[in-house]
Image 1 (cartoon, rainbow, N blue to C red):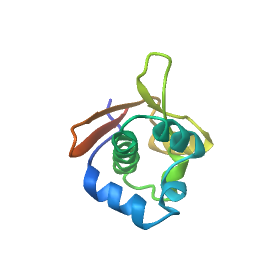
Image 2: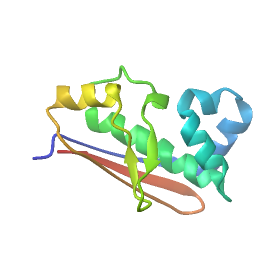
Image 3: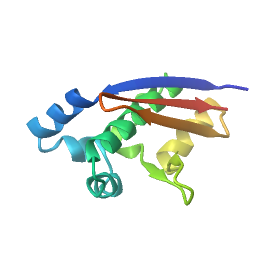
Length: 121
């Protein structure tokens, strides 16, 4: 049974501007591990945008819980390259409140935008 669903689209150009304008933006939005991973990619902005879209989609999926900060929602790739949200204490607490046992995400992007969906079951 679906307990929550969220989708978000991130404009690449807008995110790039936000990162350039505000030096603290990366630290406020991303974990150290995400910053290191994305910065190591050839076109890092696409990875940053995809992860930003996941974070926003997750917040929409849990809809009622705004107590989590974006950098607490950490997106990593598993051994097969599939993106996943790290099930840290903050995420586990939210899932428990929503009575959700599973969390699924998907990311896609073009050169102009990144989109993500998050489904809680």
